[in-house]
Length: 363
Image (cartoon, rainbow, N blue to C red; front, side, top):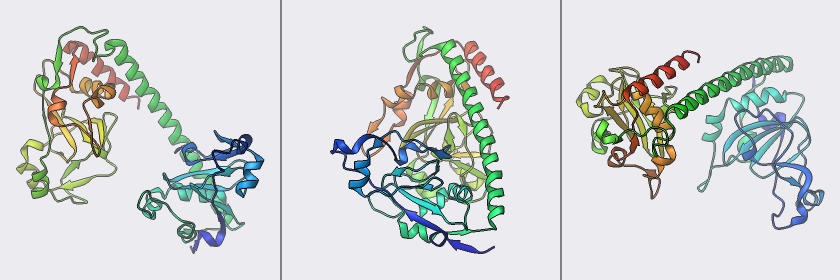
């Protein structure tokens, strides 16, 4: 199947912003979109949050995007995609594709949507990355016969709808768990429902990290291996996310016993993105990476790890009060030890943990 450059099968346009200080250009009835209005579920876009006037269009020299135009955000961020459901206008944060008869717009939509990482790798710029018109024109795409393009796009749309439905179902289950937590315990930073003894995390668990010198001296990431290094990007909403992992050999992991991970250990990111958590589900499989703290419960009669990981998830605002904000947000190990909560009875924690496990079976 031959590859073609997008510039040979599409007319590529950008947009612009009418002068914001000129009130006559704004609050009209003409749709004018920005990248902020697109998300990962956007397919067809027909309306914008801000509207412009015909005078704003004329004085700025804006060119309309016809219905069916494939819209791609080209900066801040790169890679959001949509299809214009009617004629509209946009700001300068897009590169837009008016498709010729050789390429089906829905096929191009799914192609661009699948290439987010690649598109971002093409970005250029010091302050923020952007993909230029020239870069976009030279992107190559495999182009089957037009009816095959339509068929592939239809199948991908069906798959995406099923994925979106599943995501919505999972989000509802997550909300159910959170509601159950609030119902049982309320706000454990203030003790509005639970008035048991307050405990610092350092009283319940050991908190440690992989030291910088240990990483420099011993750790060499591999793309395959025996032991997975759990980094910040692997910790999301209480779960391990393992679609992007690095490895080390078992011998190296055994040398660094302090940062080995065991079933029931809680992970918390402490630099950059602060407070993302996950729970380790298996022994002898994982090792701690930089910028992630290990919280290992030692007072097992007082704390359930599944309860604690949800406690951290639902008290992120409290956790952020401990963060320093110099170059990037960060929390040191002592501050994590100083987190203080009203801790309910172990029996109540176990009851909540059982509810979480039962809910997870529905996922």
